[in-house]
Length: 126
Image (cartoon, rainbow, N blue to C red):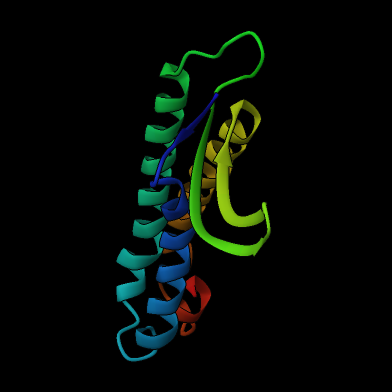
């Protein structure tokens, strides 16, 4: 059973937006990286937790396991064939997204204290 969910894209897009923010503003205001770096990864982790909880609440039938699906856009359409740029969340990818975003957030928080005196502080978070 595939259930549409438009929040999955933000698990990837938020850290990408954080990168763009740190790349453009980071050299002029290096301490913004303290908020932006861990902030966007923490938000991605929160969205991942909410998505996994939503996935856990879905009932799967006998023929297929439950899955969340987020179509970003239609890439190719030829006759009846279509290929989408999309994100899917099933039981295995749910565990992986929690590990990657959760550990990534902890690494960012640890790095704030570890890199606080480094002149390339903002570049590190970029």
